[in-house]
Length: 55
Ligand SMILES: [Zn+2]
Image 1 (cartoon, helix red, strand yellow):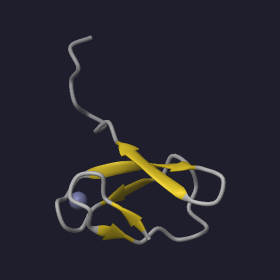
Image 2 (cartoon, protein in one colour; image 1 turned 90 degrees about the vertical axis):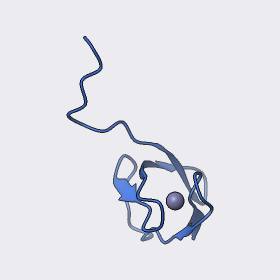
Image 3 (tube, helix red, strand yellow; image 1 turned 180 degrees about the vertical axis):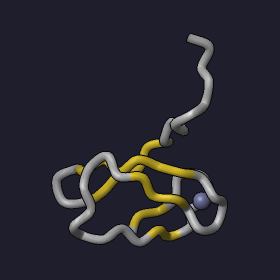
């Protein structure tokens, strides 16, 4: 279980998940990119594909 950085909802991440996969919090709807650390997963905010960042 990894906690959502936004709302502390417990997000279950399958053990075979790959770094870079996107998970969505079922509680607040935020999307996060999976970062693997030594024995655990971390979540960082995902940049939504398709957004125009003004480039
Ligand atoms: Zn959340």
